[in-house]
Image 1: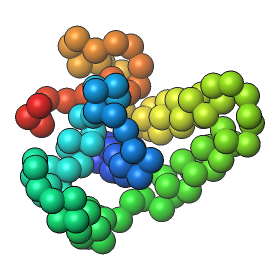
Image 2: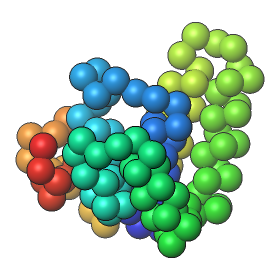
Image 3: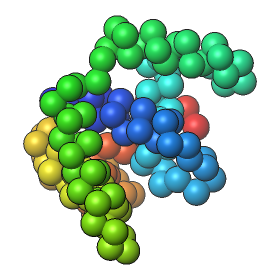
Length: 127
């Protein structure tokens, strides 16, 4: 499993549930922007065109089925719990476990806060 597989999974998750680009964590916005760049999406293009490009990208680069299943199971546990914050804790636990598996080192990019999501932060997408 690699960083792109995790980025693709998180990006498709956020795109499917919707998000506010003004309030989403910058690391997740970076993942979505990277995913969009890989899919060939251009700023300002028609929604139907973007959706077709996403479908084409996912046809050519399907989500890792094992990773997707683990994500679904963890999130299902969070939904079933009904405890305040259970969904957020489930998401954080999944991210923590999966990122630990693919992190080549524990070194964070300069200027990021501690945590595995910091390992996904990168500057290769124009903001």
